[in-house]
Image 1 (cartoon, one colour):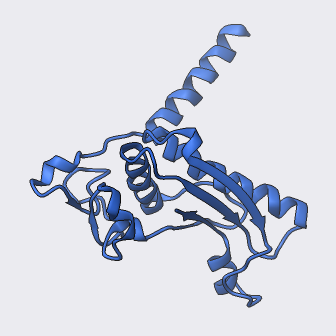
Image 2 (cartoon, helix red, strand yellow; image 1 turned 30 degrees about the vertical axis):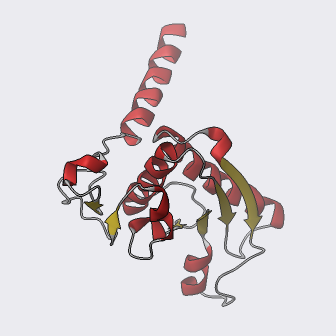
Length: 176
């Protein structure tokens, strides 16, 4: 039984490492200190990313509205804290920025839609923020650069009571 348990743990750890592959192209690869969004996953911009903007990890890049780093909201599926495709790429860019700019810090704010109890929503929002934090840490950000706050359903972006509103409220926000 012990060998079976060890095998399962090894599979889980391997899957986690594969899911958090840190295949990030360096700033110097473009020759201009920046790269087009999409360079994190495939290195050739062919990741199918919905990200737009250029990427620079210079300290001032965080204030550039044309930078991919200006995108700071991660959306989640209903009752989920799993980070989907394009948002993984976005978080990787933010993680690399934090890794290269040790004086920068972020607050990750977790949110949910109005469905569910208050306690459940606070816990789900925390899991969403923790998922983002873990991926930032895998990219080299330091733990002391990141704080978490869970708002649950308390700060909706859209106060409607339909799927379109709920979709906007199921999010984590990266706040510098």
